[in-house]
View: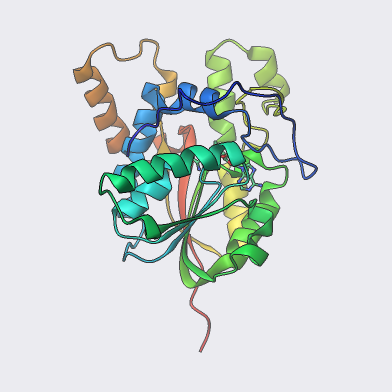
Length: 282
Ligand SMILES: C[S@@+](CC[C@H](N)C(=O)[O-])C[C@H]1O[C@@H](n2cnc3c(N)ncnc32)[C@H](O)[C@@H]1O
């Protein structure tokens, strides 16, 4: 997967939460891109997805619905592997950057332009705008930016075809507590007021979730948890970030080795799940 250069974007404006309590990423393109995808942690996230998705999903070039696709890396990853991708994203800023980058990549021969289609839509409107049902849905790092993550899981489950797969990546509340303690924010951790408010340009998620919640919400919606992995199980806790390329490579090797092993995956900054919807009874 490739980082995206957003250096040409406009001065960010100030945005607040939507009425539903969601944080669309309008005005955050530069900040999000700089603090994640142009930094080692973004590189690691993409490398880990590149490693894990082929293990955790049955990929047969089926059509994909990418919900809250952001800057479009994941949609591009699937397009490069022959999938037709519908990328849904409510932020016009993110959508504009993603589609411009995709156009460059397809002009360079990475995929056919008609493989990608865009919907300027929040998850909540997808039952009307893209009812599917879909055999593969991805929703990465979105739940933590909506006011009602439990309802979002219900909506995603309703869009899945029987036998379909949902690749869901969420921001791990337990890891957020752990990293706050390590950074010395002891009172914050003690009071357990960990979530952000979604104001201005802050990127602390407003709805981090726990593994227990994911188990419950999946089961409540008739989904079967097939696999789970932690993304960035070590990186955020390092006292000294890797200084050399060889150290970066060793860190990636460690992340790969332990991302699916108990207890390490449980403290990954993100938790990556594959859920499936059982085939209908015949
Ligand atoms: C942290 S970014 C993740 C982007 C991308 N999926 C990734 O993994 O890089 C969160 C994205 O969720 C989008 N978002 C916020 N509320 C949403 C909603 N209700 N429905 C769909 N996407 C939403 C934001 O606009 C933003 O692009």
